[in-house]
Amino acid sequence: MFFGTPHQGSETAPMGELFGNIVNAAGFALPPVRTKLISMLRQNSPELKKIADEFAERSKKFQIMSFYETEILRPLGRVVCICGSCEQMQLLCV
Image 1: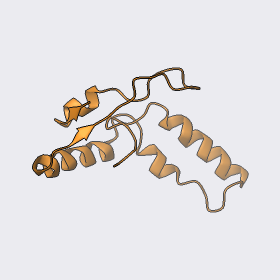
Image 2 (image 1 turned 90 degrees about the vertical axis):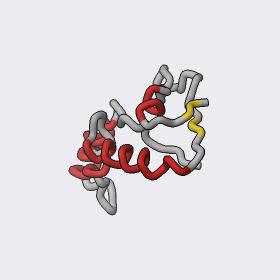
Image 3 (image 1 turned 135 degrees about the vertical axis):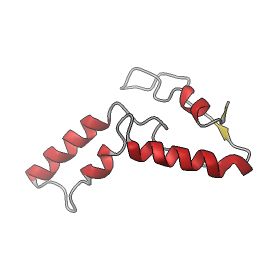
Image 4 (image 1 turned 30 degrees about the vertical axis):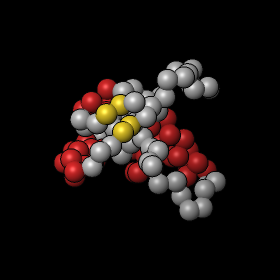
């Protein structure tokens, strides 16, 4: 079972990257926040697209079911994942 970033990236990644930069500049984090990794979680990230494409190809021999949120998540006030990302990877959304 895997829990992670939506296949298409997250619109909140830039905010996380900014927060990480602030924390690093203030010297609050040891080791420093790895903001380069956070930046790879942005929407339309080439790194995430490459991972998604490789996974789609490798997963053809497996039966995969993908579950996603249907309830609004507080404090965000919205559903986090959209089922459309499953369709791009030709996965079954349940």
